[in-house]
Length: 383
Image (spheres, rainbow, N blue to C red):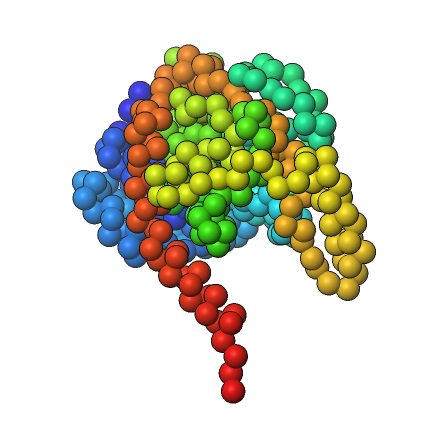
C-alpha cells in the first residue's frame, strides 16, 4: 500500500536514522508533504535532499519534543508520524529526569497531539534494549517476538524506551475526534550501524589513541546481530505501508517487531574490527583483564561514584550492566517482520560493510587530526 498523497512527520529527522528515513520516503513515495521535526535541522540536510524531493513539500519544524503546542502544530493535518527521536545513553551519564522527560513524556505528548489532530498512523522506533539482556547475562539465540525472557531493566535508557513503547501500543485503536481510530506499532531494531554512527566513530577514536589497536570489550562468543541503518529505514517504510493497508492493519496494529538483517552474528568488539580492519586497525586478542575481575572492578567504580555522588556527579566509564550487555549472546530473527510487514533487508552484509568502511575512511583523516591537535594542547607548557 502506497503512502501517495500522505502528509508524514518524522521526529528526530536530523538524526542518524531520521536522515536515512527521510531520504527513503522522498525517493520511494510521492508524499504531499514531509515534515522534518527536530531541535535543529541543519541547512545542509535540506540541500542534500533536493535531488530526491520531487514535488513533495518539505517543511521544517524546529522545537522541543516536550512542547505540546509545538507538537500539535507539527501534526496538524498529518496522516502518519514516524517517531524516531530519543535520548540514547547506555552509560547512565544523562540524568534520569531528563531521559524520562524526552523519551517518555515527549512520546506521550506526541501521542496526545496525534489524537487531538486526527493523525491515523503512528510508528515508534523502540530498541532491542527494551528486551534486555538481564543482569544475569542469560542469552537469547535467534529470538522471536514470542520469546519469553525475564528481565528487570537496569539502564535508564532501556526503562524509558520500554515505557514509551508500551504507551504507544496502548494507544492503538484510540478513537479520534473525527470518529476514525488511530493505528500504532513499534519496531525494535538491533544495534544500528552505518554511515553516521557516532558509536563507531568513538571506537575508532579509541583505537587511534591506542596505536591503531581496537580495545576488546566483548568475548568472541558473545554473539549479537547488528543491523544496517539503511535496512532499518526500509523496515519503517514497510511498517507504514502495512498500517496503511486496510487488510493488514488489524494484523500488525498494536504489535512490536524486531528488525535485523543478514549481518553475521558476531560480538560487538569483533564487529568493530570487521569494519575497521581494512583501515589498518587490529584488535586486542583478549579482554584486558579476566571477565570476572572486570565485573569486580566495575563494581568498585560504581561504589566510589556512589560515595562521591553527594559532592560531585561522576559517571563510571563502564558499569556491570554495560559489561553484561557487551558479553551476552543476544540476537533476534526478523522473520515475523518479513511475514507480517513484507520487510526484507535491501542491503546485503557485503554492501552494508562496504558503505560503512567507506564512510569511516572518509572520517579517518580529520579524526586523526583532531586527536593530534588535542594531544598537542595537553603537552603544551606556556611560559
